[in-house]
Length: 140
Image (cartoon, rainbow, N blue to C red; front, top):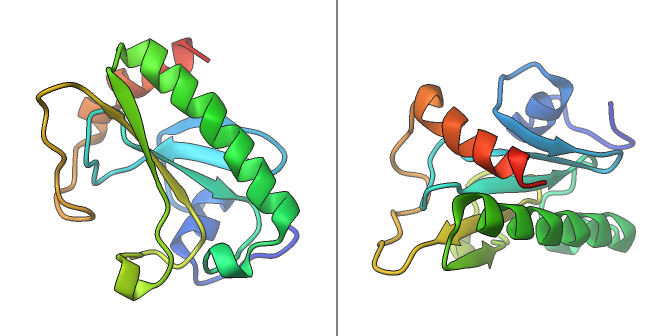
């Protein structure tokens, strides 16, 4: 599956296909899927196919791959959802708000006048997320 993974990590299980996700994109180093607790419409996550707890634990070549994918996805999300902007966020450690301890980058399309939901609070149904995902995928 990956060069380095953890059998008890939620995101490693998503990469392995053991837990379902709404996939937007995948390459040899990264996997992108819709956040099931979105803060904005189209909120999605970029994760490396290398288990690193946070930014400090992630080898630079994997960090570079995540950054390149984040840029690609932000461009697609902005175009596909016709958003006014895109918020890109990355949290490191529980004190910073990190809730899953596998490095990940949040990409959150933003519309003027829309407020951002709280982090990791309200779960959205897959049938609501899929049409949004389809718009982002179409813009890739």
